Image 1: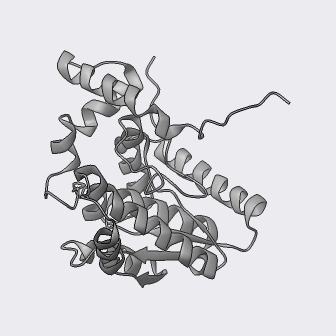
Image 2: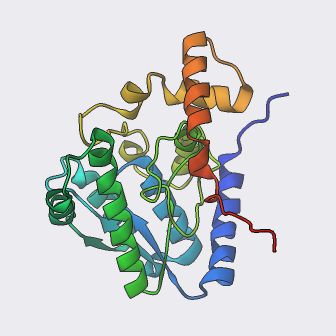
Length: 244
């Protein structure tokens, strides 16, 4: 029998888990959250606020030049009443691109900003007695829609076992503005949504993850392929064991 998702119970359990993490791995430390204006960072920041109190959550907004939807990120930090910094990463990104002595691949250009953002989060964290929150969800991780050592990094991950639909339900339980919960994720480069780039909807993906059911065999094959080739992102770095 299909189990019903209990957003309230999951939210409360996640809040308790965050508190326990900080008790064991940084008593009195602050949660540092990169705020994009999308649902994932909004929900993680809200969970951290409920777990630790608004005075122990620091939001970091990191536009790369002009960010068209930065007003959504500002809406979130004002809604939660948390301290925040705006750090424009454009100079860092462009400076590195100019100083690399070769032509950058398309994937390098895409992945560089998330990795600069993670460096920024750790700079804030180490200067503010912090722990960096990972804001990934299960659906994105399942098909590798994250950047290794970029948004896939962090010190603790409250939501990486929750699908997009489950995340939205938790967001509503937290009382977040609907515009933040339902805002379509955009890649920030082409203006396309995540679903445009992936070739299937998160609703289809979430159903497949939780039930194994999907109507389109081509989409099933694509999801399976993406899951297989991106498994390494979810595993610890392989380490050679000399045997002594």
